[in-house]
Image (cartoon, rainbow, N blue to C red; front, top):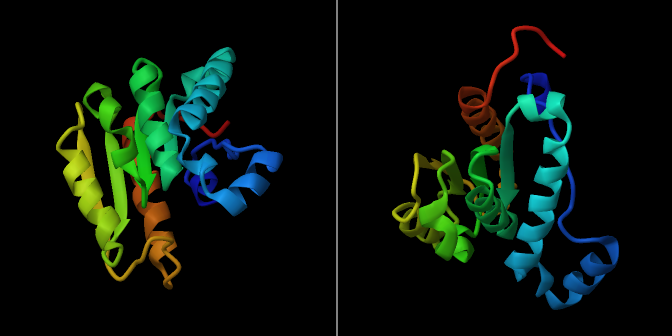
Length: 172
């Protein structure tokens, strides 16, 4: 809703189907199948590009946890389409092989109290091929459950996308 209020069009979807999600809730292994998640994300990107009005808006990807790795790999696969990526508490290290090929500007947002993921993101940021920034939200843990922290993630993300995606002069 916040992105829409700021003038960004959004498409929210799960990278795992309902049956897969039930399996993953028990095994926790499908969420780490980054090639599967990436393939699905690329199919969505390609589908959106078939609509010229939607394609003209520019594509930005927002991914959390392992979804961030899939977003980065998709950005490497579709460098002419993906204009910006935001990772929230992302496991960007799981996309290590693709990081040098990512040309899209990448914002990595991590909570200051999510020490392991913060270290992984700082290390991974050195391998990105294009513009990147690590933003640390003070007092936040991995899920940004603390008061005001998710709102800060939304603000940082929207600002990143608005600065890097094509703008329209009037609302659609």
